[in-house]
Length: 178
Image (tube, rainbow, N blue to C red; front, side, top):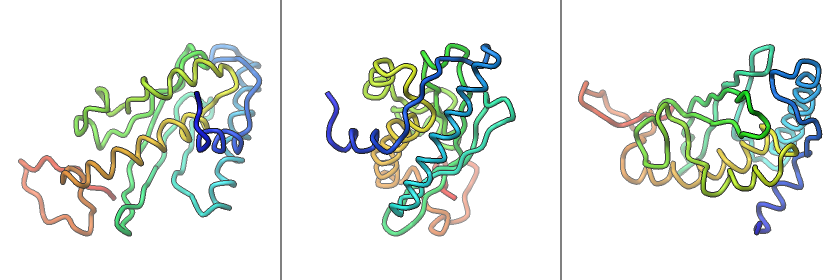
């Protein structure tokens, strides 16, 4: 069961066709082209809707990805480093997106700062293999996670905006957003 917001988000991201992992040589190159086209389309749509919220780049093989994601709360921009690797079982297995700066700061995160997407996103991904890709993981996994978790972390004082951060002591356990 998919709600209307999810349907609208999905309709703005091209679906992929090639079922290939990084171990599949030429087929992976085709899949990577589809991934990049979907990401470009998703970023363009976000910019057109004044909803630009991440930057992403990868190694030349398309197996390691990193960048920045941000959210606005109380007119302040909170920015975080993000990273993930493409699993060898991709696209059967979704990438595990990590926010290393928040590692251990919330229960909705695994070791290494990997965000929890098991309850809501993973079943949706499994039903849509191989059509979902990196853009879908960002739009339906990372985006909603940031929208729910970051305001809570800010309210609890775990994430503090850099402009509101006083000099810290070594015992301070707050994460500072850039």
